[in-house]
Length: 198
Image (cartoon, rainbow, N blue to C red):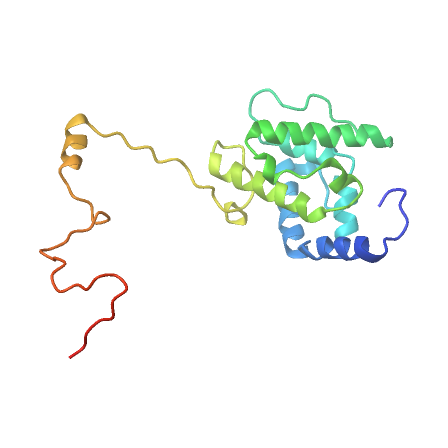
């Protein structure tokens, strides 16, 4: 964490719960995918949570990743490594904006400080998983790597019905509506009265 001392009490408990969500096996899969997707431009990071964070922290690897998912004009024009904190955070923000334009929902996005300060690297993993799943689902030829690394997202299956088919559907009684099959209320007692058993 940048410029912060150790956490105590409730802050430590909260951070501990967040840290437990981080998955080292998922880290390995994501690293393999990013290296395969970016080609020879990116080398593997040091193993572990800190190595993963330091690898992505300046935003350059993330920018190369999102750019590799486009065939035409790239969403991030300028990718440069900088030792200055605000430049690194700006690069991460550019990645997040490009990922949102690519189709990642706001709920799947991490915040810049989650990565830069290492507050919630599990959120970073979730964003990268969502990005990989979307890239596999789009199937536009830009995805490189094993397609089994990510789940395909559900796709719309829109149906068109003719006017005749719609009219036929109006004459069918749905099973949810039920049927009385000749049942009546004969023999029923009024509400609140005891049932007579003979």
